[in-house]
Image (tube, rainbow, N blue to C red; front, top):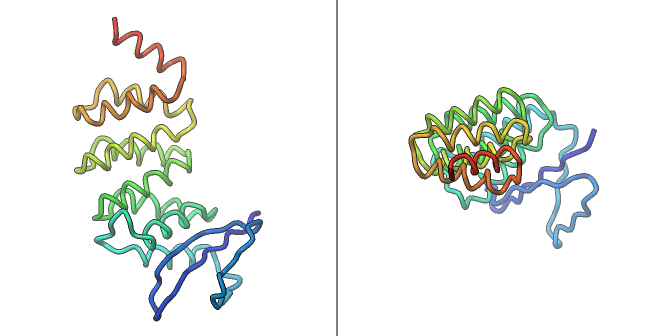
Length: 184
């Protein structure tokens, strides 16, 4: 089991930044005071991180991005369910899109269902495009057929274009066959 260190930069009792480090990383706090909390249960860590994700989070938020990626790096089963909930239910398109990336890293059937549902049903085209990217992050045996299906059948031209882009990047023979077929 590898340890994950979740570091919070706190200034004036407000979290300013969240970053994660593995136990192999040498940490330099730049002369700042460091307070270590030990023996934190993963589910409690995930709950705290989720609580720091605001409802109107924007893409550039160090807190939101750090919290979502830290959740994604947890091995606890509650991480997966938290990410799926963020990817499907969060009011911010930026948060839904970021969570979809981390859902793809789970490479499970639940992940595939969450991602494909976002491609089909999310109201925001940018989230749909980020879901297509998430499909490209699945193992090729899972992702390429799904991308081909999106490229063929999705009603949104921007989403189909995104699927074709990631198929081209895959260098998978099935993608090349698909391109040969549509270029005939």
